[in-house]
Amino acid sequence: MTTTSDAPAAPLLAATGVTMRFGGLTAVRAVDLTVHPHQIVGLIGPNGAGKTTFFNCLTGLYTPTEGTVTYRGTRLPPKPHLVTTAGIARTFQNIRLFANMTVLENVLVGRHTRTKEGLLAALLRGPRFHRAEKTSEERAMELLEFTGLANKRHHLARNLPYGEQRKLEIARALASEPGLLLLDEPTAGMNPHETRTTEQLVLAIREKGTAVLVIEHDMRFIFNLCDHVAVLVQGQKLVEGTPDTVQSDERVIAAYLGTPLENPPGDDTDPTGDAT
Ligand SMILES: Nc1ncnc2c1ncn2[C@@H]1O[C@H](COP(=O)(O)OP(=O)(O)OP(=O)(O)O)[C@@H](O)[C@H]1O
Ligand SMILES: [Mg+2]
Picture (tube, rainbow, N blue to C red):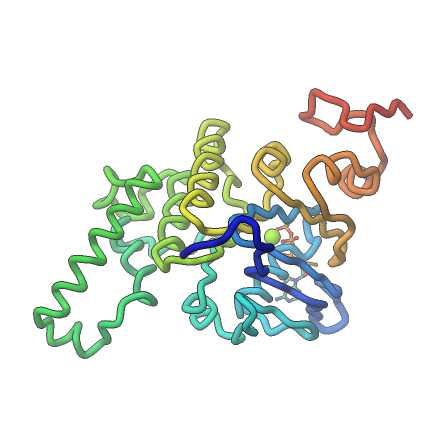
């Protein structure tokens, strides 16, 4: 995979006018969002803003009521496994691991979209199957090294601490060799140390050439990592731009806190310089 730095890169992901209605409720309303290669894009917004629903529209879990989603210029099929095959992988806000499988087995499951060996080959267990299996295992082990879980490879997923389960979800998603990784609240429930190592992991994922779209409530995580941030409020995109632009936007502060404040909580600088 090569990119030329002087040519403007075509978008990897382009969502246009995405709307999702559930009966009378419009959870996502006419949202446009673009992710370019090598970008880390943040999606933030209060609880119930429609962030996860928007992810579900991108990944074929939901078919948007209106709007289109393209990946590398091609419209995505509304089926999760076809979206994965196309090159988008995701993690879930509510962790979805195979609890009674080992850490290594969970990652191997994530590889199945990238292996040609079908069910028949697996049943016959011929030399080609064993070769493919060995390659898959090597690749899975690389991902476990990468995510810091290699020494837990034989543990059952359900016995991992919460923070490591979230990392295992990331390893499993990476096993499908995505061009774009969607993370839904990757640091939820993590302690500050785990959150920091997850930040490093996301940066390393980008270094390897995978773009990232991440939903997070941890603003420090978002503003440290993202090149671009979009804010959803009541299903609509309120603001988007660089972390600096978004951080100092009074509408964003108001949407989170109800009323504009001099300093957002947890922030020791005053981004607006405004003392209203
Ligand atoms: N399958 C569904 N059927 C009906 N309503 C739904 C469905 N999924 C989500 N909603 C509603 O859509 C709205 C947006 O929910 P969503 O989970 O996308 O928010 P969110 O931004 O991810 O919130 P959080 O930060 O709490 O995870 C909510 O009002 C929710 O109740
Ligand atoms: Mg959510």
